Length: 127
Image (cartoon, rainbow, N blue to C red; front, top):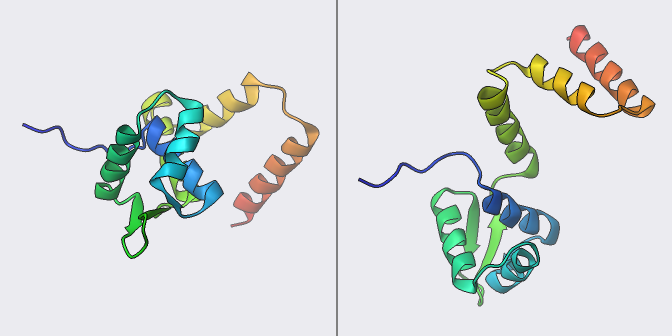
């Protein structure tokens, strides 16, 4: 019985999306060149990954162009929100507060960042 596909983005899927977000629509060779800088990978593996991502509707392929050009369907913001939601659920038992407290206590926070956090909290309280 085949394994059910996960909605969670894998590390490689994120890397492919990051290439597409930074470079814009790109052929496989451009995507593969960037992935090769990060990991030892074959061209055929990159093609297969893009095929999986097509099935998951994370990318689209323009078949009118030769070579085919891939573009991201999911936005950076949407991917970040989904990954953050998954992290909160899996690691922090659904508590965004625990995540925020851990993030703030794990590294020195700059005065500028603290000001942005205060402004966001004020905005949330005003809603």
